[in-house]
Picture 1 (tube, rainbow, N blue to C red):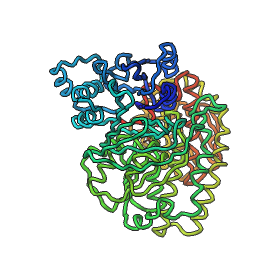
Picture 2 (spheres, helix red, strand yellow; picture 1 turned 45 degrees about the vertical axis):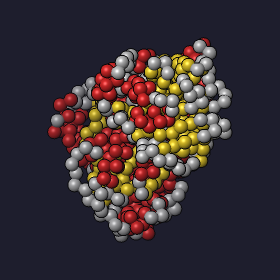
Picture 3 (cartoon, protein in one colour; picture 1 turned 30 degrees about the horizontal axis):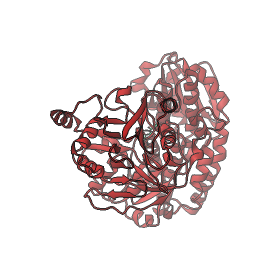
Picture 4 (cartoon, rainbow, N blue to C red; picture 1 turned 90 degrees about the vertical axis):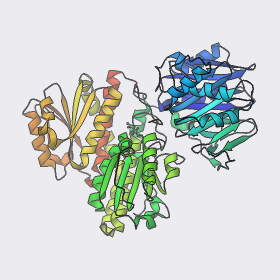
Length: 605
Ligand code: F6R
């Protein structure tokens, strides 16, 4: 979702801004722009194409300067056309970029119109720009502090004023913003990756903060206007993560990185003990009697899978909620619940808001499972487990999902041990299975050529049904989500037992039915569900464990997985579904890493 970069330096900062935007491309965007203060005036270039096109434009226009702001826009208010792209100007004086949504923009716009401001965009952002202009009295920092008090909604902004040539002011509430500290230069960005080539020293702004960057100084005021002494953190540069290497897309690279990501994630788990989740986790775990999981999208599906593990391994009642629903519904809080928030980015607005909502209801026992150490979600929870997936660039989540599953399995087994359901023999078995997972995953990845052969068929279809049962129903859901988001083929997932209660009406030879078929205790039931499809002329594409004895037949296409992997089987079974979605999208020629309308980091509601 929208990305921000800003800089005040003594050298031409346009290359830094463009490089920063390139590094933010993975978040998803539909237009981009950059503005600098040059000869006392703000000048800008904007594009509805890629950052590469913007780069060509700025070179042609010889746009350079020592103070600047830049933006990748993911449209919320107003179409993705050039005049709505940021930076947005007010009367040729103030230039501003914004990530977030201003909920009261209509009333603010009416008031500002009454004061003579002319609106030339359909964005909510333009009201912030004019508002700052309207309250400016020679001090941009003061003007921004005054203006943001009138805003309802979420924002991260970076602003410049033509009369303050070496100053960039930033502010955040709800949307992320970090300050990067350099020598004689300072930066602002939506995340640390954007500045990986410029600095490794960062300040993570908190909600309500307003900051002022000049060449030598960074000043931060908190929501009450007091000087905020925020911690400076060193974040190792991870520039290598943006290299594609021998792969065609980041999604493919990330699918193949899963054995390594899982090995790194379990490296710290020599035994199943609470310190894995923080040194105070033992105390917290001893007080809980249930689990409440909050997440969105793919992370929600990892939570759904975990519910099966929590209830079967640790015998602890578990509820899983879509964060955007939970945050607004009336619920009955149980203060003895462990609230587990799952998020790859750690910045998802709905998940953050759901966590804050849970806390406001009195939930104190909170745990984040997250892939980004310095994220808002990790900062807000009491306990945290960091997955070691490495930076995920492809919008469609793959290695973050499987590492979340590993983390959740570790949590279920740790709680199971604490509650007396996992003895030392079982603990050793779980640990061995986890350690063997990377090799088992590599064997599944070797199925890629067979999956490519299926992808040609799938690419011609408009609808696909996914079936799974029990622990593998959430995997069917995840397979359907992967396919729809990157290939734009309509896909739905059902627990196979539900087929006869409605979706069977859709089954014809034109709609492939993908079936996740592990050799677990439901396999015979699943085989009956498959018969229901075949009897209606449906075409089944089955990922079957080697020991299921499901073999190719008319209307029945089978890819043989390794032998059943017990409770950890979902982690293996999701991988061929990722590959199927990926190769189907490749055949259809979609923009796999940046599918239309989607963003990597969903920082607005
Ligand atoms: C789908 C996908 C999304 C995210 C969701 C939550 O492939 O990536 O559904 O899972 O937007 O994002 P995080 O995990 O960053 O909170």
